[in-house]
Amino acid sequence: MRRMEQRVLGRTGRNVSVVGLGTWQLGADWGDVADEDAITVLDAAVESGVTFFDTADVYGDGRSEQLIGRYLSERPDAGVFVATKMGRRVDQLPENYVLDNFRAWNDRSRKNLGVDTLDLVQLHCPPTAVYSSDEVFDALDTLVAEQRIAAYGVSVETCEEALTAIARPGTASVQIILNPFRLKPLEEVLPAAAEAGVGIIARVPLASGLLSGKYTKDTVFAADDHRTYNRHGEAFDQGETFSGVDFATGVEAAAEFAALARPDSTPARTALRWIIQQPGVTSVIPGARSAGQARANAAAADEPPLPGGTLEAVRDLYDRRIRAQVHGRW
Image 1: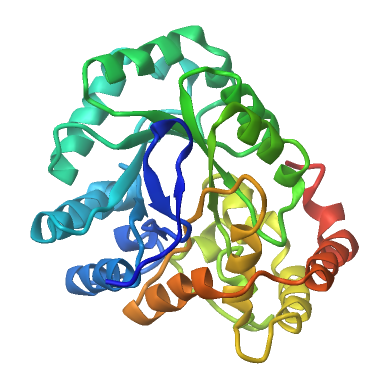
Image 2: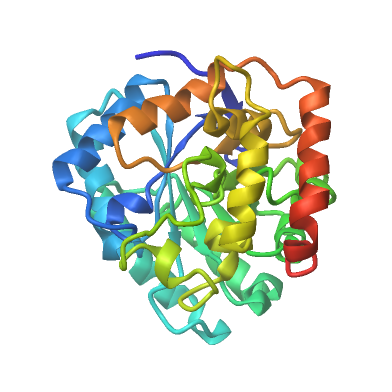
């Protein structure tokens, strides 16, 4: 296995690789993925130095967790830290975020992953009111005391939700959308997290693939791919798909971004490298549908830091093409 840079994931006190693996797609929510293909992706990531998997109890109705559990039972030497999420199995009402439900969801995830104690459980983009509930965070503290979970964090949609969660003394980490098309977290969230000792997990790092530079305005995605059915927020928050950027606008901006990549790199690795070097980021979690994609994503950890001119060009691109669309919304 290759060695990759490790960073402490906030208040968990545990080291994780700067490039992790997001496993939403392994639940087949982005189109079919065979079990053996999924295992091959997990193995390729680990062999490339990845020590951090991110999943959720609703990815494929638990299939993603089960595949990770199967893989790690076969590779107990892999040394992988697994973060899962809970909360999306019920109607999104604050009153459903209670200890009894937490225990039931934890029991299911522990069974799926084949562990007694979950490394990290994140509230999965709950209603905004949940972040201000003392009862919710008391319940999370109870799960830690019962050794069902080692630590807890949150996955958020907005910067305001992130800041509210960071103020909670037990919050170990915040997962937030961050990429060259979503810069708002840089202004307040990352500095606040760094000051509080809270880890930052960057999700949707390639803007649902836009930043790979592979799509055109004529690209068609499968009907069961969220890039088709959630393009305007029909099924869940619009920011989860293309970072909330209009597809046609995103394709044009992505072509401009691709021109910033060095000749010996790729637009995707450039985007991941940009995230890795943002102060306060712990790990970035791109998804992968093939072993080749997993290896290519991991290779971003070996990229040299982007020069100041490239960083300025990213900011200029965002200000000209993206800010007006997404900044106020999130």
